[in-house]
Image (cartoon, rainbow, N blue to C red; front, side, top):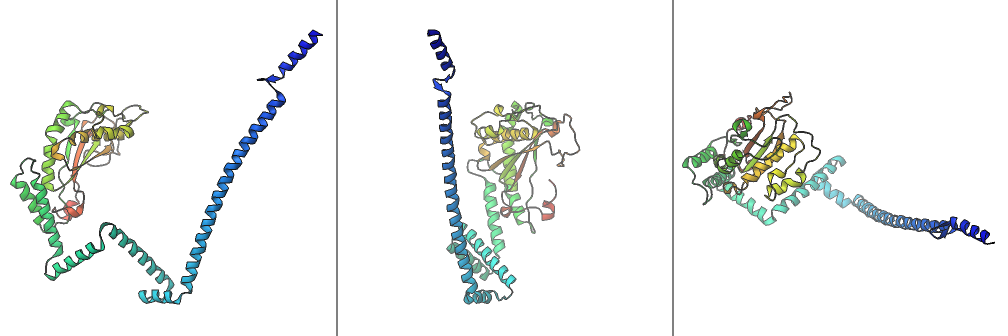
Length: 355
């Protein structure tokens, strides 16, 4: 008898899982599935309600638009007013006239963002008064720009003294007749062939390069700024065509700004290709030039030419994968932020020539 009881207990235990019979487990699984299904249905119900609400709003907008269109189409007064203002009768011409009115309204809104109506009226009144006094408005603006350029050429009180020749050059460019562009300043090139080195595959500056950027280069840039009346300093990093190695990782997206803010060192930059290497080296130069008080207030922009530009300003598409020190260079280009602020230059045909 005891043997039969023990055998029955053993059989019963073989049908248990975590203390539950198979039937109880099935009931539990069905219960879990019902909960999941209820959650899914609830989410779909919420989406359905939101879609129905959006549909109702769109239908309401469509009804309002139809009502407006019907009102306009039935209003003879509106049609007559449009025809009277435009002097047109062709539907296509009237439609074009309407589009021009809408565009004009957009232009007025853009002007109002920068000028108030009173300022605009005062400006027009001043122009009319100058013309009534036989004053050439364009010449007056140009003269004001020349004076502004001379003031910029004179420099700040704390800057080194400016030679009289620089001021005379600025005045001469502004007084030259027929000037329509701007005389381009020379490009400052700093290549490995000239002794300006970076660490191979890195943006780390050599001590000689670092010293030149601190002592000599800011003065050279400032002289060009005053002579040519420019305010933007573009620093372009160029490389040769040799790959820098197999790197799957680049931290430029993360660390370029900290380096520019001097919150991280140049050695922390890890480019993965020549395009990134050119930009990292430009950032290295800009981070040093930004610390010069001579260049405070001017715009410094780092750019990358990668391996795509030869030293003669042509595209490097023929392929020269060798070790070329002249191509591993930094170019500092100076320009004016707005062509409308240029005070004087060579004639437009000369200004368009390659630099």
